[in-house]
Image (cartoon, rainbow, N blue to C red; front, side, top):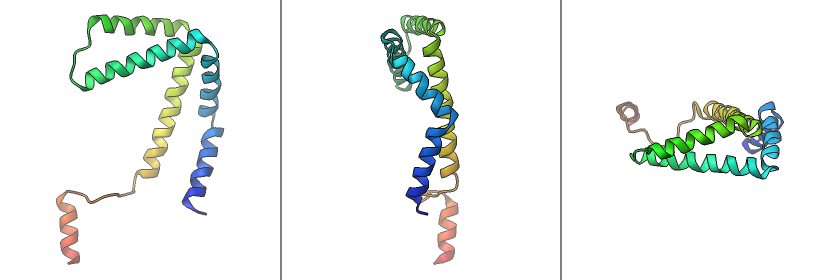
Length: 124
């Protein structure tokens, strides 16, 4: 069986998983309600904006913190958005775990440490 066939089988298994099924069900609910969809998009856009600021070393203003806090409060009230975000997190944890498993022992590129130099010197 080729690596591509195995990848396709893994894709089907992921799509059949409880995590993915719950995620897609909640995604449909959130996307089906304009208010929920807009709230989620506002939240995601604000989170990305604030993370970008933090990564570039900029301070997050009190106004931005307040805006995030207000959105968090609305999300706590909106059960579909809250559950969607939880399901999205569970799915991303599963996918990250799979990535770690798949790539844990795969070496790509030329290492830049002394150990690599030592082993190549022995071969010459």
